[in-house]
Each structure stands twice: as structure tokens, then as C-alpha cells.
Image (cartoon, rainbow, N blue to C red; front, side, top):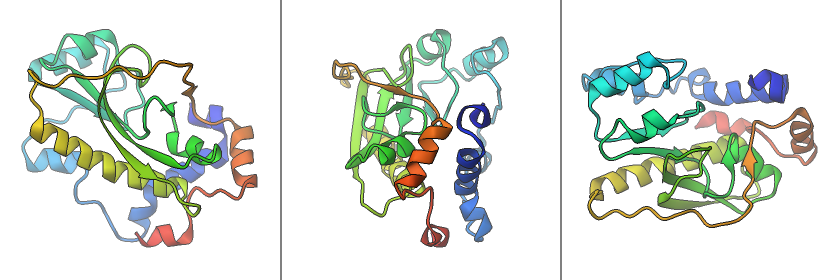
Amino acid sequence: MVLRKSGFIFLANMIYIKMLKYFHGERETFLPSQMAKQHGVEEFRSADINNAEGVARLRSWNPDLIISTNFSHYIGKTVRESIARNGCWNLHKSLLPEYRGMAPSFHALLEGAKRVGATLHVVAKGFDTGELLAQVEVPVTEKDTVYDLNRNTSIAGGKLLASFLEKYDPAIAKPKPQPNGDWKNYTYPTPAEVSAFRKKGLRFYRPENEQH
């Protein structure tokens, strides 16, 4: 799907960004699958979390919360509203309602955004449209790449989520509606957008990113 929508250059760069730490001997020791194994948590892989098997597995866990992050599939009504006692949340790498949808770091750089961030929000119909639970702002510098913004917002978002969960009380927490307005829903970039990105001198990554 990404190849068809965005072309080879975008796909190849995004794959390389994900693999940087492996190429340089810095294998992440806290991958979700590794953490699940360490803590005896069952792991389940699904091509569609909304199908009968996915819904049944989620119900079998009897969860207090469902939290998604870096999850590009649409979450249907059954999963988001009728399984977890305290609802379904998503951690998105932008300051919602800005940069809803796919590839927020890419689009933020392309449009010259001065700030990005991370948002914890309730999952609702549509993409990234639900009520806000918590947000954190991350500044954008002239040297930032897609890799930089993805990394910085991931770190900030992880800390935000951990802090929010430590203090969370469902009887007190009150999500806030997103501001009204004609907010754009972004998709994976087109080849023309990728070309414009490169012509502006913007980068997916720089050599120094490889040293992280």
C-alpha cells in the first residue's frame, strides 16, 4: 500500500530509518515482543484487529485499557467501545488536531512546522479525531530530519503515557474535545510531495543519525 501510494523512494527511506539501530549494533532491548516475554504477557499478531479472531482474543484478556501506538490499522467500533472497561486510547506523534493521519513527521517538515509533539487521545470514529487526554510539545529545529522527529516525539510520547498512567483515575479524568475547525487528515505522501520534500533540502535522515 505504501509503495503504491508514495513510491519507492519514500518506502526505502522509511525502512532504512526503522533499521538504523540494527545496522549500527544498537539493538533495542525493549521491543514490545521482548517486554511481553520478560513479563509473561501473551503476544497476538493480527492482520485485522476487528475480525472475529481479533475481537475474541481481546475479550479473553478482559482488559482495563486498550492503548495503540504506531498502529496504522483502523480500529472499529466494537474494539474501541465495548471491550476495555476504561476505553481505547491512541498515542499519536503530533499535536492534535494538527497532522492527523499518516506520516506526521514528514508532513510537518514539508510544511515548515515550528513544533510537533505527541498526543494521547481517546480512539473515536475516523483517524485521530477523539477527545484529548494529554499532550506534550516538541520543538522543530532547522537540522531536524524525519528520523529526528520520529525519535523525539516517540521519546516524549512514551514519557507522557507513563506519567499519565501513573496518575490516571477514571473517576476524575475528563477528556477534552479537539478544537473545532477544518483540520486536514493526512495520508502517506504522494511521489510529488516526496519530490518537493527533497527539493527543499529536507532529509529523511543524516549520517549523524546513524550514530544514535
